[in-house]
Length: 246
Image (cartoon, rainbow, N blue to C red):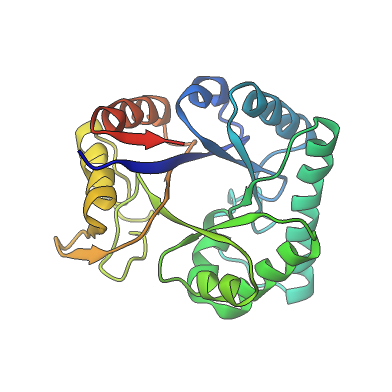
């Protein structure tokens, strides 16, 4: 049996309240730090849970847009976006310092993540904000994305990410949430979707074509109503197939 090793990450601190249920089954978390959700109280709470369960901690900065949960692309001056991203990361770093915890990675949220996948200007703003904190962190990015290329050129370590609960188009973009087939909800479908990517290095797109993909971390969205059950089932089934979660 092939020995595969992967990370399972979930976006937390977004007001759903399922953090304590999810933590035992994940290996890293992305903490909302005030852009689309979250405040000092929620950040501190999730940090403490992550420490308790030995879960790697990441910052989850977003366009500053709580009204739309960070899922609408915003047109804003580069310097304003840079300052916002930097502040969000810094706010979490301050809490991590107080809680004697370490920042492992950064993963942009929602529309910011999607725009940086294809837009070099936005990707560069995120990378510059990361460079400004002057500590070694990893950046979770999609395979074959613009932000991955920009990060590599700037000597920022990257970890390729794929989505366990989202369907893909044949250009490796995610199916829009406006479409009925955007989310993967069934247990069996989700496990097969992820294991195919792990074992074959390919993802089955919605048009049934199989596209090459690389991923070392797989995300389940914490605001998915089935998140707890999906993560629990995913971990149990992957481990039964010989996949180590770490």
